[in-house]
Image 1 (cartoon, rainbow, N blue to C red):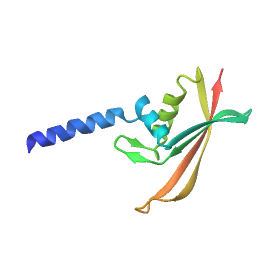
Image 2: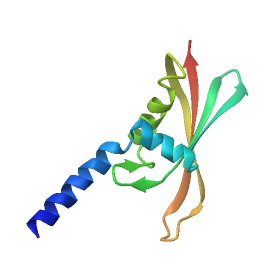
Image 3: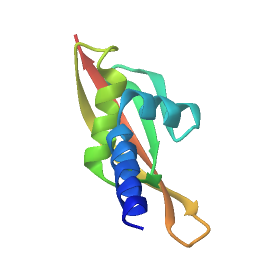
Length: 111
């Protein structure tokens, strides 16, 4: 029993350490939970859409997690960037009744 608890705790730390990583953000992008689009607008360069998806170590409702994802996405795209606006849109409800929210972040590269 004690051995099972230790294994479970270790597995939890592995999952938590992966959340927010480049691989994790890439997986979420491939699954459509994060989308990055260029825009034809002089005030900003990219529109990032992030679903309020929740899993161990990641919560799309937390601004710090959304900003961590933006940092991972734009570390190679821009020398420096700024999130100039963030809005949220309620798109429905999940099966358990929690609101489904999409966060829209406008990102401007500072070149």
